[in-house]
Length: 482
Image (cartoon, rainbow, N blue to C red; front, side, top):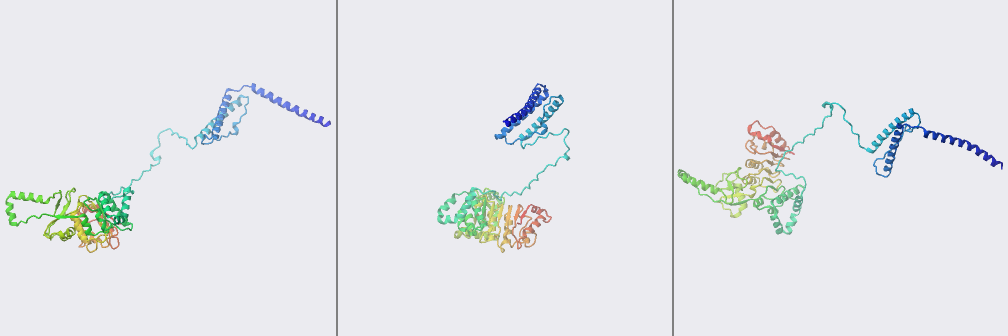
């Protein structure tokens, strides 16, 4: 058993030093416990423990998902202290612990605040001068566009417009299947709905479809008081247009009196007053209509304007045109020596008429006399691509003299128009700008002239008119060239 004795001897040798070391450590621990620690060190230690406890609590909350931003806290090496019993080291440790707790609090506050920025306090003293401050950004005011109230601008498509578009597309099929039912429905439609349907026919013409045919024009007739009548791109004739929208009835003729009889009657003032009363009675209509033998531009807007045709007044320029129009309306019932009253219900409220690109080409002179005689209240007239080269210049002269209240006039898409026809004082000029169209505000000349450049020439002439007082109103006219 010699090996067993050797092992026991070795174990005794190892046990003795270990017991000695443990005894010395135990003695030192008891000595430290009995040593006195300062209050400052204890407070610093408590603050440190409190901060560590708060940090651990925050970590547990982050682990449970209650916090959105994780907090990472790493104690630097200088935050680990040995608690010696000497006063100098205790004071040093207390200061270090205080600094560590402050740093930990700042780190915790930064972590919990997330992406929020710290509020900066304004420095003391007076504010900086204005030259040191950044200049404010001033928004540029928008340029106010010209407002033309009688030109409608749709910003979005309403349900009514969508329905009108579908009616315009399917009217031909609907009318061919049930013409009587179609006529009854159209007679019940309000005037505004008919206006929109006519505008949709014009929109379809711009898209390449056929415009309003001649056979459907009667659906939009009657005594409806239109405000905007749009027949752009329609396939209507002047005869059909007159039959639908114009009326005529006999005018009671007054007996003719010779010059000798007039002198004898003038001597008696009572007879003169009686004749005046009779004239006023004959000039008035039973329905409140008023009229004159010439173009009366100061008539009442609430009454129908009419024109009286006198068969013996053949010197008038529009005599033969009005005579042909009456023959279209009356037919064989027209008497050659009977005066007639020509009128249209449109004259009460119509302010905008669009006859652009009507095919076939309408008789321009007759149409101009008809509009001037019965619709002098027009404010907007669109006749782009409507007049032919033979009657076109004369038509422009008649319209410029008869429609004195025009604000908007479209005469574009005529290749026969030149700058001499519209500007200056040459023999070709058809518009007398000094006395005609003094209320005009917009003149549309898109694609006018042989080279489509007449609009530019007219705009330059209007911008710099001759120095005459009667032409100052030309500067208010806006010429649309494109």
